[in-house]
Length: 157
Image (cartoon, rainbow, N blue to C red; front, side):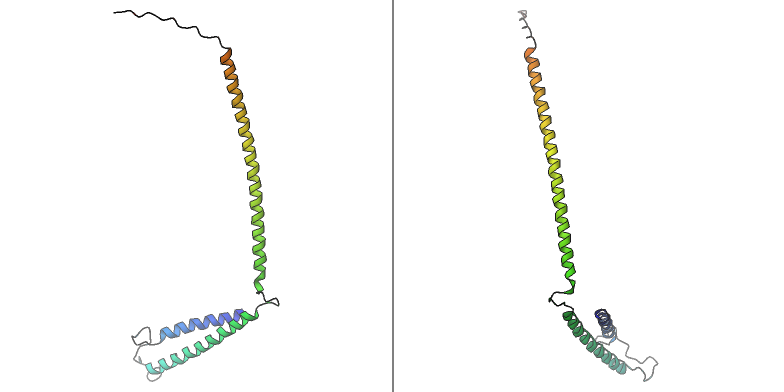
């Protein structure tokens, strides 16, 4: 029922637009010409304008009625709890938000696990570097001392 009234409402709106554009304005506009164009007394400018005016008024009255009817239908489309019939949208939104929250929680947990893995890798690399430094110091400590280079006299001039 709502759809039928809405389609009629839209058709009336289109008809009003066309009828208003066809009417002759004080500046000429898109209106039908002032001469009869060989139609004799059948479609004079005055009778055409009168018919367009009546058709526009009739369409406007029907448009007003369909507007009121659509308002009444919208008011009556509520269920017994006073909520709109589209309460399913709320549950869908809640479900989507719940799923997104769960996905974000899982992604955060995966990221935290990866961060722990990277941290342990860094700790291992630091430990290996410390061992390498210690081994190098030990190797330098055990190396024989280099003999001192004797002073070589320079020739005096």
